Image 1 (spheres, protein in one colour):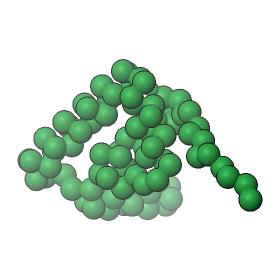
Image 2 (cartoon, helix red, strand yellow):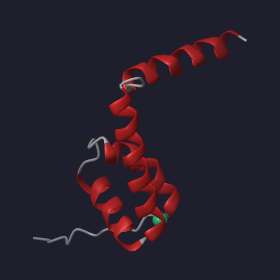
Image 3 (cartoon, rainbow, N blue to C red):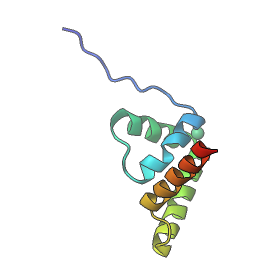
Image 4 (cartoon, rainbow, N blue to C red):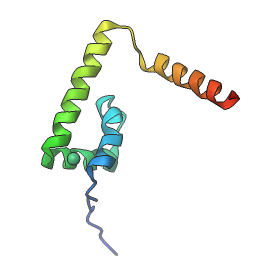
Length: 85
Ligand SMILES: [Zn+2]
């Protein structure tokens, strides 16, 4: 019987940045979340960015203008327009 100790893979700032949005929305699960938390704990730069994005998101939410779903629709429309060019 083999026992594996769960190994945390260090991620860099670029990789961390890709996960900020999901992390703030609480979509990030399992090792993806653990890796990001681990990175933020040791990286002041990313910690500040997550804090900033979180603040920004709550501000946007409080305005009630931009919702994630609407943004996705806008992105889809942009993709559609671009595909026709
Ligand atoms: Zn970082």
